[in-house]
Length: 122
Image (cartoon, rainbow, N blue to C red; front, side, top):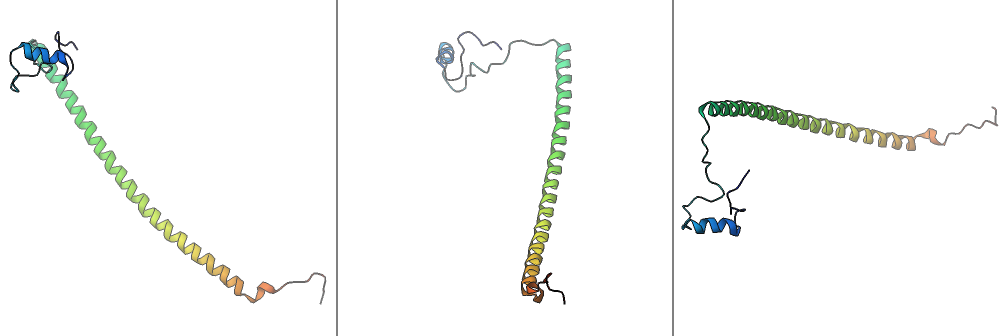
C-alpha cells in the first residue's frame, strides 16, 4: 500500500507537515492517512467486487454459526464432565467409607488373633 509523499504514521512530523501545508489544522479536516481513494472502479469491477464481498460475508456468517455451535457443544461437554466428576466423587467417598468400615470390622474381629499352628496336630 502506498502512502502519499510526506505521509508517515499517525502522530509523526511528516503527517503534521501535510496538515500544516494544507493551511488547516482544525479537527474537521480529514486525516492525511485516511483519505478516500481518488480511483473509481469501472462498473463491471464494482459488480464483481460486491459479489465477492457478499460471498465472503455469507461464508463468514456460516463460520460464525459453526463456531457458535462448537461453543455450545463444548459447554455441554463441560457440564457433562462436571456431572460425571460429582458422581465419581460420591462413589469414591462411599468406597473410602466402606474400606474404613471393613478395616474397622477386621480389627474388631475375634478371628484376627486366631493362628493355626502347623506344628501342632490335634
